[in-house]
Length: 131
Image (cartoon, rainbow, N blue to C red; front, top):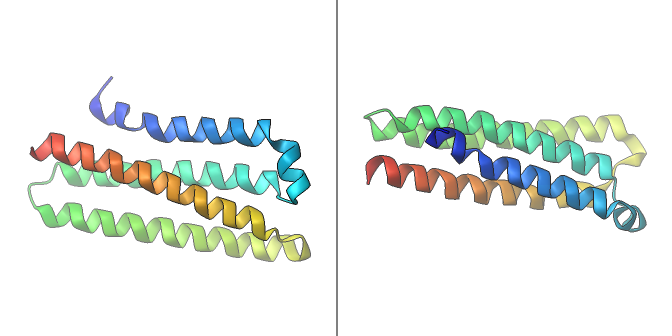
């Protein structure tokens, strides 16, 4: 298994752990008034966005110009930010009065978990590549 493939493992681990937690706590989230399907959708969206951004950053890491890597980090942040904003806008317009604030806020915390994993992975890859 290549280093890039192994680097993706934490994203999948987070994805499966979150899905297991949502499944195991389904009734608890329902009692709290949280829409579980929004959480599952956000989890899938974050996985896909992080894989896409990771591939961009991994390619930029092999470039000799360090500015390319910095631009890929900034581009990745913009892609994820706009992806989240667009997802929330679509959810807001389609859900109408069924809009679930708690699911959106829990999803934003989940975004931070994926962000932490991305930073840790890219720091490790950058250290291995340039160290």
